[in-house]
Amino acid sequence: MCSPEAAKDSPSDWALEEIERADSLGLVTDKARTGYQDNISREEFAELVVRMYDKMSDSQTQTSPGPIFTDTDLSLI
Image (cartoon, rainbow, N blue to C red):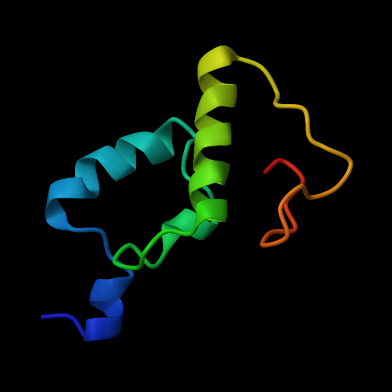
């Protein structure tokens, strides 16, 4: 049995196969590699969506010169 902290950083059994597949396709961001049991932030979700869009459309999303939203420093959101 693993500790509560270790369980928090591990995906649920039902999600493991899909997470491994997404990772093999280059869709998983560094931030999305831990805290699987935590709520996802808008920034983290947007980063995953942009990465998926770029992979599916075989293009690179153009970033703004600076952050548009005040709750993130990422220019692509």
